[in-house]
Length: 260
Image 1 (cartoon, rainbow, N blue to C red):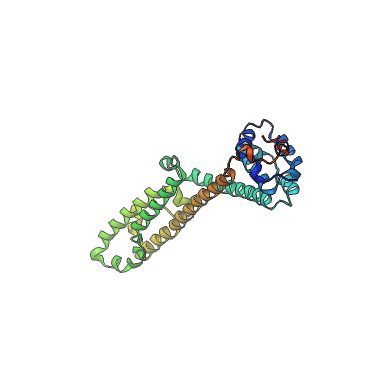
Image 2: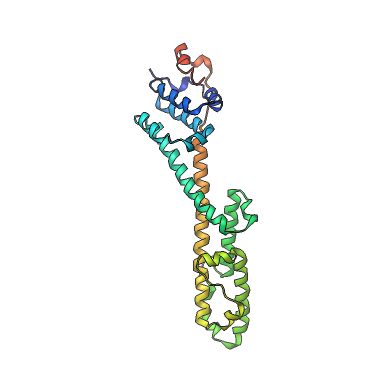
């Protein structure tokens, strides 16, 4: 007869699993107790095990073993699938973040926690859009620029303003980001020699490509945060302690000797 989850001291189980010296041996013993533990209880025990012996989970391919042994345990199976899915997603996201880390040389940014990093990126995106006069929606300023550039009376003034804005954009991203997304870096003197239509097209190229960089980077960090939170939730099940008087028989305790 399987144990009722209401008869188990999960607080005590948590402490004992935390102190396990041989995680693989524990898993083998847990499987041997399979017929004595219900689906819910097994899922909680595994979640506690995952929390304290995460390195073992990463270094040892236990997925196939778990799936074979607990294929009739719906809650446990879903817990195992979710864990390994989140691990895979987090690894993939970290690999992409590492590439971004190598390219984006900004110590101020990398010392922030994930929430502040997301806030930082949101603020940078807002600032970037403000440079193009579209932070509150609407169209970027270069779309209405051509007639102004063709007016010799205002061209020098507007060119000075454009150069000032381009320098602000370079300060946001750094020059190597321009190279990565194939935006040619040109000298100020060369910029002044460009035709009006080329100036507009150059600004459009910068806006479109760097908008994509900002949006995808922000999405990446938000995704990393969500995955981390889901993983943390899975590894930290809500535990509660049932008083000994509620345990129905000595057999219940004997059956759980391994964990208590």
